[in-house]
Image 1 (cartoon, rainbow, N blue to C red):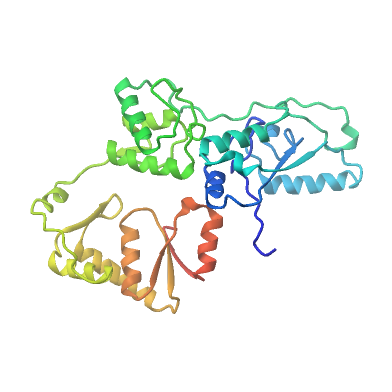
Image 2: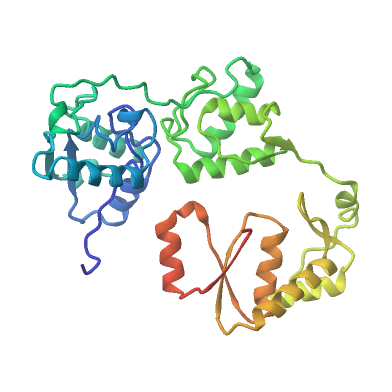
Amino acid sequence: HKGENFIIWPSGKLQRKGLESLGGNSGISDILKISPNANVLLIRTTGLWGSRFSHAFSGHRPNLTLELLTSALLLILNLLFFMPRRKITITIEQLNIPSLAPFEKSKVNQYLEQWYNLDIITTPVYRPYHFFLLGKTKTFPTPELIVNKEPSLTYSEELKKEVIQIIKEKFPDVIADETTELNSELDSLGLDSIQRLELLIHLEQHFKFNGTTVPNTLGDLYLLCSGKSETATPIKVLPQWQESFRTKPESEILGITVLDSFILRVMKSPSQIALIDDTSGMLTYRKLLLASLVISKILEKDSEKHVGILLPASAGSFIAYFACLLANKTPVLLNWTTGPANLQHAITFLEIKIILTSQ
């Protein structure tokens, strides 16, 4: 109640096969590095695999709202007290933190997986949802698996070697090589969601493509980098962009603040191309300033000091950023990859009432 205790799900997701898998999640190891003297209690719940709230029941992620409503109706139909019950076991144990020092991600995750999966029964258990149906059995579907979307495609050894080398250079702890199965999930190889996004951005720059989705498997990565994916489009470098940098000016700081420097750059090189994206095309510094001024006039009408910006890396995000500065507002760059809880914390902490998004 005082913010002194927190509940954390180390894996950050529902079980798919009845076993806990932390994959590349680094949350617990990071927390232990920051707070090695924290009092950590491990809590393991067994007996729910096969219930309506698990992947096992339908073979895919359950709809929480629908299942809650269905469960409430089932309770009424069973006259509340006659609902068939499951045997649920909750185990609580204090974590021996010193034994995990120096808190390497792989070591911490391996320990937690072993503890959470201790004495786990991976066969789903069915309990009828009405006392009249006691004794009835159920055949559980096979859970949905993430598979390579183009299993018939093959990739050259040169491409595999190049991609793996880039992964290793950026994330040395990743366990993968050219022989790793295409359907291997990046999470199981040691990459969490934020690291997968960072890797995608790095590979986009290296292989010159634009990806619209974050890859889940190694095969997805190969598909994007090979140029065979329908969701990846090659980056076209326009001649005007190259022309504008033929006479490259010396690096210099034109003003004291970011806004001063931007305006002075516009005055010095108004016709130079400032940025290019697929939506807005080419924007010179003059057009970038004019677009920012238009948005700033709208923002000036509001008394709020902080303005949230939740946009992808595009012309729109630059226009929104400079518009805030021109309107004497503080731009707050929000990162969706941090998750809903962190976004809500930032919005609440800074009392943000205005958020510029693409919607």
